[in-house]
Amino acid sequence: MTDPMIGVVAASEIAVGLVKGHQLAAPMRTFPERTDGAEPVENESDVHSMPMEAIAETIAQMIVDLCQEQIVAPAGVGIGFPGIIRNGVIEESPNLRQAKGARLAAMVGSALETAGLPLPVSLFNNADVTAAGMAATYGHLERLIRVWTLGHGVGFGRYPRAEGVWEGGHMVVTLDPKETYCGCGGRGHLEGIVGHRAMRLRFLDLEPEEIFANAQLQDPTLRDSRCVEFELLWHRALAAATASSIHMDGPGKFFLTGPNARFVRLNLLSRFLHEMVTMSPLQGSVFEIVLTNEEISIVGAAVNAALSTP
Ligand SMILES: [Zn+2]
Image (cartoon, rainbow, N blue to C red; front, side, top):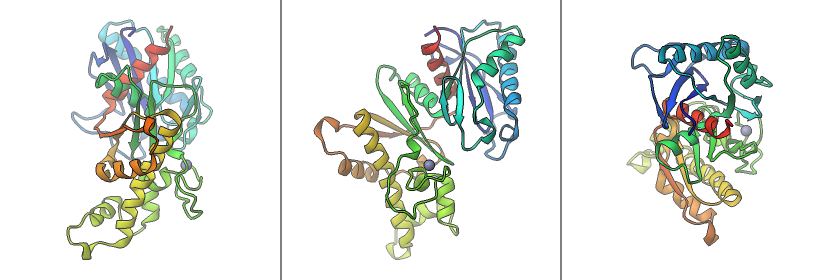
């Protein structure tokens, strides 16, 4: 890998790191700044309300500060951002509306140039950089891996990255016309069943943690049939989208991550998947639940950028 590289992830906060040999070479920098040891705050933070010019300027300034502090001249910058990303442009980003159409790679590139640090800048989908970071961290850089990120929405990441849209979270998993909870407004989507926001819309009286806790109660007479049925639907939906990915792209390893990976029952998910994928050359996919963090995604952004920087 071209060393060192700068990796950036920008979502509810911006995090920037210097990456050498598939590892962070210095503590990452975050905006807004965190107090020691604190986790990023999941609310409408500053980044959600910032115009794209300010986001680009902030990223560039953080890179400049980091390079000055560490006295390094990196080979390039990789940025992970939520949404449909192609050729350095954010074509759509449902949770950061102001991002639609922004040429973020060019914006950060020109802000860096103005600051006297001209660098090639590459832009990627954030789930793809998570997949690349996991491939690098767990030594799977030679293999195809896929990642479901289960949170507010549902992200789908693939390593190695391939040209295309790959909006796996919006795969259609049901023909039921009443399934309208996806954040994008499309009917029957995976995210409309599995996403956190969608679960809250479906169960106005229960939080997602209460739904799964109820479905798991020891005494079956205390269980609410809505919760029990929904837990099955939730796993079937995730299995169905995984089966579609296998039918299009082959079998392999699927990592499950994000805050709602805690709801996954691996035995149930694997059983449903086996019912949906029966052709023998497509057997052998494995699910694994892993914790990821911004450090892993920063490494992934750098890995992907190194692969696309000449
Ligand atoms: Zn959708």
